[in-house]
Image 1: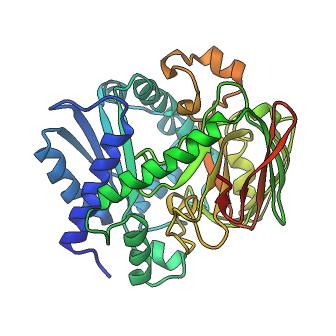
Image 2: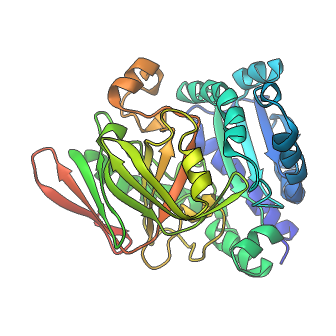
Length: 400
């Protein structure tokens, strides 16, 4: 099943909705937007480009490296090449107003023989570019969104036909609705009610319990829940960035991950005093262990997220973290991310969230951000500052 022009137009409209919704301040005519895409996504990229130009954006385009290029780079480059960042990149990112990324991988495992530390060197070297855009986003000057275009590789790794895989994307992104952008606006409003409820609770800790998980998470001071903001298409999750220093216990990711050209399954983490001190996986253990040593903060918590199955139409494993972290199915999902936190979960003025204040409040800072997903039946209990315990999530739904 290939997306026809009607579906492509709708998908592009949704991405424009996501881009403009995600930015705190309105875009102005002739603001600069970077459009990045993988080669298989060209049909959608052309539609997005057309709509951006029609709305009077200045558009920069960038086709991403092919799997063969990526493999050649990480296999043959030396350290100096892996740490190279073109001087013009800093100027580019310091002047961008928006960014759209369309993922359409032709391979998910092409880097399985590459030492993760090689990829880590490049991630660390480019981390400052992400920090530039984060600061601009905090100031309301930058917005971003991303999506996935179906490919045979994604469908095959998810063990679905390309028709069924594409069908999941269509229904998850509301592309079968008459007005998908309006449907997303309605979803945003429903999510806002739950976020308002969560953010009003004086929560001290969360206790996540399932068949293979028993994890305590310290919420932290000046936190709030975010989600359904336009950043990810689709996005149904509500998430926060907790105080990493209070993470304690066991976490199990029963959904596999395709990440960095590697396949990982059955990740098991044991946290003590905020750090993952035991790191195991049924498949891809070496990659997982090396990745969580990318930098000093890579083995610490950057995000805690819950998805309500009443929102999400995703009910199949998609071999794509963007979709899998928003899995609905029978039991919803929770996921944690090891690595970087999100500064927009700070309940104060994001412009005042300096690096020293982030450290003081326990916001994690890392070049890594890896979502690890659990779709088991679970309960999430909040302990309030007064000692009261409140069940906030059960049977895949918020107890709102």
